[in-house]
Length: 192
Image (cartoon, rainbow, N blue to C red; front, side, top):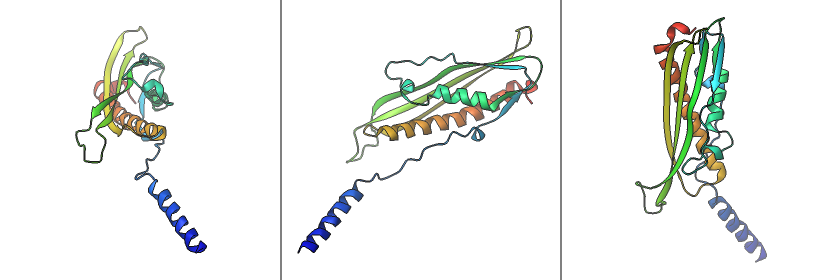
């Protein structure tokens, strides 16, 4: 009798543990600089100006994450935009690197799903300005990228971090390819 009771107890505990497992696992993204576009300019110097300042009010949440979109785009610009030359100056202004979170009604609401979800939107805006040695503007290009995603309201902090990292990664991939395309269109004579 004790043996049957212990076996049934083990089975019940096992069922409870297995039923508490998440139904899908989110994978962490690795921000490898080789996954983004590499661009080379015929300039002597490169200056990156983080003009954007984080807003500490609703609906902005970029200040609350460990690796902000501003930090990620700054790292990409440092590592993947290179300069070779003895004249001219490239100035890159980071005008926007914000993430907003808004609570929205779930339009695809099924019987057992939540009525409200979180909508996240990431905005990037960069301004590339190329100056000659006399500080006269030779060329300018503005690059914008906007990405969004949604999540359940009831998620763990780890899931939130992974969702936001995925959002930042996708936006950076798009931003880097858009940057390369627009720079080749407007500044090709100053690129290698």
